[in-house]
Length: 192
Image 1 (cartoon, rainbow, N blue to C red):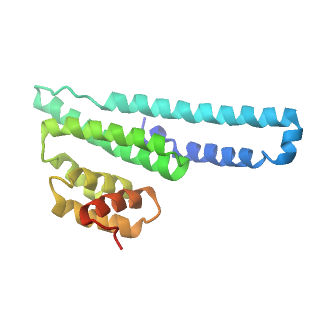
Image 2 (cartoon, rainbow, N blue to C red):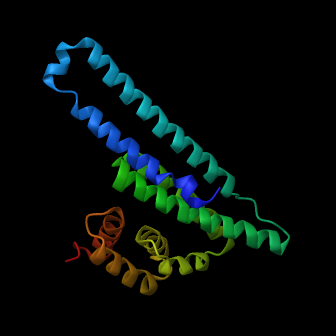
Image 3 (tube, rainbow, N blue to C red):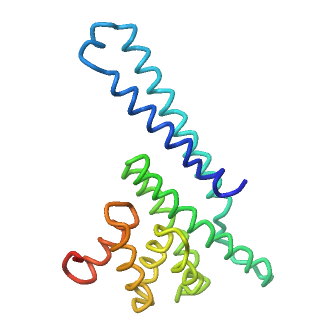
């Protein structure tokens, strides 16, 4: 399965739009129609179950990518590290969807925790986190921001320009907020 199939962003966006429409139908006059209220609540429950099933499939896919056991064979170890880097990218993209599409901080935090676990595993391979450096030039701003955050302790000179650029170009979106918080902590004041 390719990354777009795993992300299911289009379907998640459709689910969120349908939830919004359904919630919009919950008007005071709907309270007078018990049958309509039940149908609306039933549909909301169906939509929620589908969204949770998608998240469960994403978690299962991520679990398949994350392997914390080093390999003695150099080729197998290179492949394991490449899967871990792809898993890092995947969690950054899932975090963006959770934040910008679903608007659920709890789900975003779940993906952030998973990304932290991946970084810990990669640290056992290379504490300088050089495997994440190519992600500073990733086409997606969320991946760049997450990589820069993970590189702040070991390569601030590489991470800070990326965070500043993402903050400037993606304010109000997940990537921009990720950069904003780290820059605020680093500079001791919010970026301008």
